[in-house]
Length: 281
Length: 141
Image 1: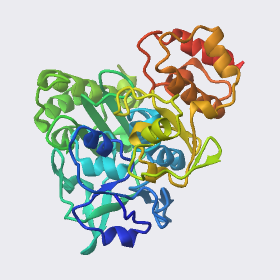
Image 2: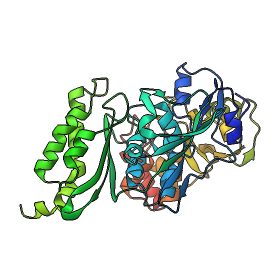
Image 3: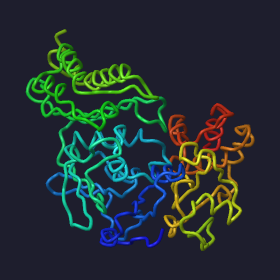
Image 4: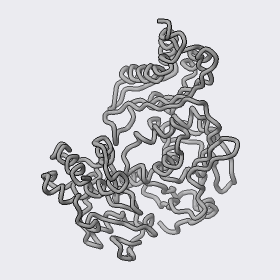
């Protein structure tokens, strides 16, 4: 597997045919199964790797694509609660001590738990490679299961997260609490405006389309409205048109639709009880 | 790399850490259950945190302090597993003990919820986990 790059610039100069090994929690499983048998380059120990979490003065946060999820989680403190909730239900402690956001993004699984919180956060990925550096919104990064816009030799160095609304969360529904792939997942962010109205609503769902998707119909049904039961019902109905789930070994398409509707209802329930409209009922 | 405090020089940087520990060093406490990071039988500490040694290549642990179940001091934790009959076939137990030692280092007086969360990456097909959780709780006393 040698040579092992020890600086980011050395990674840029690697033969593009080499697969980059970060946490290895997916790559080494695929390798063991006989896939991805080509040469690897370990990027888990770069001397000039970015800090796991860097808080900028404008309120944005840069996340390292190469840091283990458990380190990101610890260093975030109270920030990015949606991402922290996703990390909390990500595989197991052993996996979180190795797996990285960069790997989770680059694998481009529609069920990747790290991705929906980054999608609702409007994160931007900072890529670099033999042709230099560029930025790409996380919403444009994955093009299908296992497919991304990474050019040969290109890799993710940082994930930039702009300042966030007050409310954020993540809900995963899976066969068990640990070490399970999401049947569906939902991430959300919003603020509360005058009269309890939801503003800046963003929803992203995992495992209900070929890539993690925003849910524009459900977002529009909620935007600017106080979340009454009728508003929630309208958002849930609209959500059904935002997604295109399939039936597979984990669940049927119908189950996925019902589970995601339940996740959205659950996400809105705390907002519902706070809403002025609710107090009069 | 240090393994249980002893400096070592692995011959094959591309080998899995699990294979190096077992086949080259004869440290057979860590077991290969699934080989996919799902069962936790191969859990070791790498710089103090639990990892699945089946999913780490030797070159990735080049500068690391690795602790296997053999390197843990015989403690109240192991005693509690034995006296609490928390072991049946035993295949998972080395991983359980390593994970539990990391849990107790972080939470010396864990709640049952913290114990179950700390052992979420370790599967046991015999005990039903009740005796294992009780053993960890007992060890914390």
